[in-house]
Length: 234
Image (tube, rainbow, N blue to C red; front, side, top):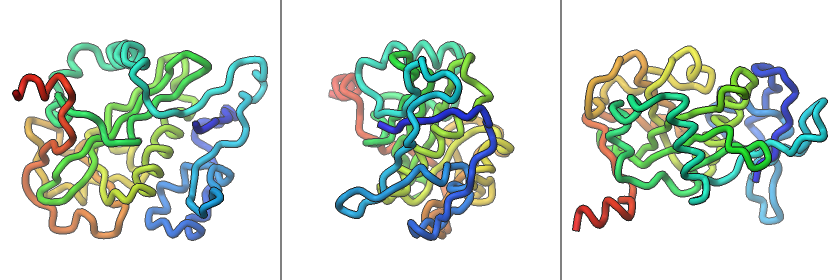
Protein backbone atom coordinates (compact mmCIF):
# COMPACT_ATOMS: atom_id res chain seq x y z
CA UNK A 1 0.00 0.00 0.00
CA UNK A 2 1.34 3.44 -0.93
CA UNK A 3 0.46 6.23 1.46
CA UNK A 4 0.01 9.73 0.08
CA UNK A 5 0.30 13.11 1.69
CA UNK A 6 -1.73 15.80 -0.01
CA UNK A 7 -0.01 19.14 0.49
CA UNK A 8 -2.56 20.94 -1.71
CA UNK A 9 0.10 21.91 -4.28
CA UNK A 10 -1.42 19.91 -7.10
CA UNK A 11 1.31 20.42 -9.67
CA UNK A 12 4.31 21.31 -7.50
CA UNK A 13 6.44 18.31 -6.59
CA UNK A 14 10.16 17.98 -6.07
CA UNK A 15 12.21 16.19 -8.76
CA UNK A 16 13.72 12.82 -7.91
CA UNK A 17 17.39 12.12 -8.61
CA UNK A 18 16.56 9.40 -11.12
CA UNK A 19 20.20 8.39 -11.53
CA UNK A 20 19.95 6.69 -8.12
CA UNK A 21 17.65 4.11 -9.68
CA UNK A 22 19.06 3.96 -13.20
CA UNK A 23 15.87 5.41 -14.70
CA UNK A 24 15.99 6.46 -18.33
CA UNK A 25 12.93 8.71 -18.25
CA UNK A 26 13.61 11.75 -16.07
CA UNK A 27 10.24 13.27 -16.96
CA UNK A 28 8.47 10.48 -15.10
CA UNK A 29 10.54 11.14 -12.02
CA UNK A 30 9.89 14.88 -12.13
CA UNK A 31 6.30 14.29 -11.04
CA UNK A 32 7.18 12.02 -8.11
CA UNK A 33 8.11 13.28 -4.67
CA UNK A 34 11.80 12.94 -3.78
CA UNK A 35 10.92 10.99 -0.63
CA UNK A 36 8.71 8.49 -2.46
CA UNK A 37 11.24 5.69 -2.89
CA UNK A 38 13.50 3.51 -0.83
CA UNK A 39 15.06 0.05 -1.05
CA UNK A 40 13.76 -2.95 0.83
CA UNK A 41 15.95 -5.45 2.70
CA UNK A 42 16.73 -7.24 -0.55
CA UNK A 43 17.83 -4.06 -2.29
CA UNK A 44 14.71 -3.79 -4.47
CA UNK A 45 13.42 -0.29 -5.15
CA UNK A 46 9.97 0.22 -3.61
CA UNK A 47 7.59 3.15 -3.56
CA UNK A 48 6.39 4.61 -0.28
CA UNK A 49 4.84 7.97 0.54
CA UNK A 50 5.81 8.19 4.21
CA UNK A 51 3.30 10.73 5.51
CA UNK A 52 -0.16 9.16 5.82
CA UNK A 53 -2.03 12.09 7.29
CA UNK A 54 -3.64 14.72 5.10
CA UNK A 55 -2.01 18.08 5.73
CA UNK A 56 -4.33 20.14 7.87
CA UNK A 57 -6.96 17.37 8.03
CA UNK A 58 -5.27 14.85 10.30
CA UNK A 59 -8.58 13.56 11.66
CA UNK A 60 -9.54 12.13 8.25
CA UNK A 61 -8.50 8.63 7.13
CA UNK A 62 -5.37 8.43 5.01
CA UNK A 63 -5.45 8.51 1.23
CA UNK A 64 -3.54 5.64 -0.32
CA UNK A 65 -2.89 3.69 -3.51
CA UNK A 66 -3.45 -0.08 -3.51
CA UNK A 67 -3.83 -2.99 -5.87
CA UNK A 68 -7.37 -3.31 -7.16
CA UNK A 69 -9.38 -6.07 -5.43
CA UNK A 70 -12.55 -7.90 -6.55
CA UNK A 71 -14.54 -5.99 -3.93
CA UNK A 72 -13.69 -2.73 -5.75
CA UNK A 73 -15.63 -3.73 -8.89
CA UNK A 74 -18.89 -1.88 -8.33
CA UNK A 75 -17.27 1.27 -6.93
CA UNK A 76 -14.80 1.37 -9.82
CA UNK A 77 -17.54 0.95 -12.43
CA UNK A 78 -19.63 3.67 -10.79
CA UNK A 79 -16.65 6.02 -10.83
CA UNK A 80 -15.97 5.32 -14.51
CA UNK A 81 -19.66 5.81 -15.38
CA UNK A 82 -19.65 9.16 -13.60
CA UNK A 83 -16.43 10.24 -15.30
CA UNK A 84 -17.05 9.06 -18.88
CA UNK A 85 -20.69 7.97 -19.18
CA UNK A 86 -21.92 5.03 -21.26
CA UNK A 87 -19.95 6.28 -24.28
CA UNK A 88 -16.81 4.86 -22.66
CA UNK A 89 -17.70 1.42 -24.01
CA UNK A 90 -17.70 2.78 -27.58
CA UNK A 91 -14.13 4.12 -27.46
CA UNK A 92 -11.53 2.48 -29.67
CA UNK A 93 -9.27 1.89 -26.66
CA UNK A 94 -12.01 -0.28 -25.17
CA UNK A 95 -11.46 -2.80 -27.98
CA UNK A 96 -8.06 -3.49 -26.38
CA UNK A 97 -9.58 -4.02 -22.94
CA UNK A 98 -12.89 -5.80 -23.39
CA UNK A 99 -12.84 -9.42 -22.32
CA UNK A 100 -9.30 -9.13 -20.98
CA UNK A 101 -7.66 -8.94 -17.57
CA UNK A 102 -5.38 -5.98 -16.78
CA UNK A 103 -1.64 -6.53 -16.48
CA UNK A 104 -0.62 -8.15 -13.20
CA UNK A 105 0.21 -5.60 -10.52
CA UNK A 106 -0.92 -2.73 -12.73
CA UNK A 107 -4.60 -2.39 -11.81
CA UNK A 108 -4.55 0.33 -9.16
CA UNK A 109 -7.08 2.12 -7.03
CA UNK A 110 -6.76 5.22 -4.88
CA UNK A 111 -8.83 5.33 -1.71
CA UNK A 112 -9.76 7.83 0.97
CA UNK A 113 -10.40 5.48 3.84
CA UNK A 114 -12.91 2.98 2.41
CA UNK A 115 -14.01 5.32 -0.40
CA UNK A 116 -12.66 4.50 -3.85
CA UNK A 117 -11.70 7.89 -5.32
CA UNK A 118 -9.41 6.91 -8.22
CA UNK A 119 -8.72 4.10 -10.67
CA UNK A 120 -6.07 3.33 -13.26
CA UNK A 121 -5.31 0.13 -15.17
CA UNK A 122 -2.73 -0.95 -17.73
CA UNK A 123 -3.24 -3.74 -20.29
CA UNK A 124 -0.97 -6.00 -22.32
CA UNK A 125 -0.90 -5.23 -26.05
CA UNK A 126 1.18 -6.03 -29.09
CA UNK A 127 2.26 -2.73 -30.64
CA UNK A 128 3.24 -3.64 -34.18
CA UNK A 129 5.39 -6.55 -33.02
CA UNK A 130 6.53 -4.95 -29.76
CA UNK A 131 5.25 -5.97 -26.32
CA UNK A 132 3.74 -2.90 -24.67
CA UNK A 133 1.11 -1.71 -22.22
CA UNK A 134 -2.05 0.27 -22.94
CA UNK A 135 -2.89 2.73 -20.16
CA UNK A 136 -6.39 3.68 -19.17
CA UNK A 137 -8.86 4.63 -18.21
CA UNK A 138 -7.61 7.03 -15.55
CA UNK A 139 -10.37 8.55 -13.42
CA UNK A 140 -10.51 10.57 -10.20
CA UNK A 141 -13.77 11.26 -8.36
CA UNK A 142 -14.99 14.81 -8.91
CA UNK A 143 -14.46 16.11 -5.34
CA UNK A 144 -10.78 15.11 -5.55
CA UNK A 145 -9.91 16.50 -8.98
CA UNK A 146 -7.36 19.29 -9.61
CA UNK A 147 -5.48 18.38 -6.44
CA UNK A 148 -2.68 16.31 -7.95
CA UNK A 149 -4.12 12.87 -7.21
CA UNK A 150 -4.28 11.87 -10.87
CA UNK A 151 -0.60 12.72 -11.24
CA UNK A 152 0.23 10.62 -8.18
CA UNK A 153 -1.69 7.65 -9.55
CA UNK A 154 0.01 8.01 -12.95
CA UNK A 155 3.45 8.25 -11.36
CA UNK A 156 2.86 5.14 -9.26
CA UNK A 157 1.62 3.13 -12.25
CA UNK A 158 4.52 4.15 -14.50
CA UNK A 159 7.05 3.44 -11.79
CA UNK A 160 5.59 -0.03 -11.21
CA UNK A 161 5.61 -0.70 -14.96
CA UNK A 162 9.27 0.33 -15.18
CA UNK A 163 10.34 -1.78 -12.21
CA UNK A 164 8.45 -4.78 -13.65
CA UNK A 165 10.53 -4.51 -16.82
CA UNK A 166 7.95 -3.21 -19.26
CA UNK A 167 9.46 -1.26 -22.12
CA UNK A 168 6.67 0.95 -23.45
CA UNK A 169 3.27 2.40 -22.60
CA UNK A 170 0.60 3.64 -25.02
CA UNK A 171 -2.53 5.67 -24.36
CA UNK A 172 -5.20 7.83 -25.93
CA UNK A 173 -5.53 11.11 -24.06
CA UNK A 174 -4.92 14.83 -23.88
CA UNK A 175 -1.35 15.52 -24.97
CA UNK A 176 -0.79 18.61 -22.76
CA UNK A 177 -1.53 16.52 -19.64
CA UNK A 178 0.40 13.38 -20.53
CA UNK A 179 3.42 15.10 -22.08
CA UNK A 180 4.46 15.98 -18.52
CA UNK A 181 5.15 12.26 -18.02
CA UNK A 182 7.20 11.97 -21.22
CA UNK A 183 4.44 10.73 -23.55
CA UNK A 184 4.59 11.92 -27.15
CA UNK A 185 3.02 11.32 -30.54
CA UNK A 186 6.45 10.83 -32.11
CA UNK A 187 6.84 7.20 -30.98
CA UNK A 188 3.38 6.06 -32.12
CA UNK A 189 3.42 7.37 -35.69
CA UNK A 190 3.96 3.90 -37.15
CA UNK A 191 1.14 2.34 -35.13
CA UNK A 192 -2.57 1.98 -35.84
CA UNK A 193 -5.34 1.40 -33.31
CA UNK A 194 -8.26 -0.99 -34.06
CA UNK A 195 -10.74 1.82 -34.74
CA UNK A 196 -11.09 5.57 -35.24
CA UNK A 197 -9.13 7.90 -32.96
CA UNK A 198 -7.84 11.47 -32.99
CA UNK A 199 -4.22 10.78 -33.95
CA UNK A 200 -2.99 13.76 -31.94
CA UNK A 201 -4.22 11.97 -28.81
CA UNK A 202 -2.52 8.64 -29.56
CA UNK A 203 0.65 8.89 -27.47
CA UNK A 204 3.45 6.63 -26.31
CA UNK A 205 6.22 6.51 -23.74
CA UNK A 206 9.40 4.45 -23.96
CA UNK A 207 10.34 3.21 -20.50
CA UNK A 208 13.34 1.53 -22.13
CA UNK A 209 15.25 3.59 -24.68
CA UNK A 210 14.26 2.68 -28.23
CA UNK A 211 11.54 0.25 -27.11
CA UNK A 212 9.15 1.43 -29.83
CA UNK A 213 11.79 1.93 -32.50
CA UNK A 214 10.60 0.14 -35.59
CA UNK A 215 7.16 -0.59 -34.11
CA UNK A 216 4.77 -0.53 -37.04
CA UNK A 217 1.29 -1.85 -37.66
CA UNK A 218 -1.84 -2.68 -35.72
CA UNK A 219 -2.03 -2.52 -31.93
CA UNK A 220 -3.70 -5.70 -30.69
CA UNK A 221 -4.84 -6.97 -27.29
CA UNK A 222 -2.69 -9.73 -25.81
CA UNK A 223 -3.79 -9.78 -22.18
CA UNK A 224 -5.17 -12.88 -20.51
CA UNK A 225 -8.85 -13.53 -21.25
CA UNK A 226 -11.23 -12.77 -18.39
CA UNK A 227 -13.14 -15.78 -17.02
CA UNK A 228 -16.37 -14.77 -18.76
CA UNK A 229 -14.59 -14.36 -22.08
CA UNK A 230 -13.02 -17.79 -21.68
CA UNK A 231 -16.47 -19.37 -21.30
CA UNK A 232 -17.71 -17.56 -24.42
CA UNK A 233 -14.66 -18.69 -26.39
CA UNK A 234 -15.29 -22.30 -25.37
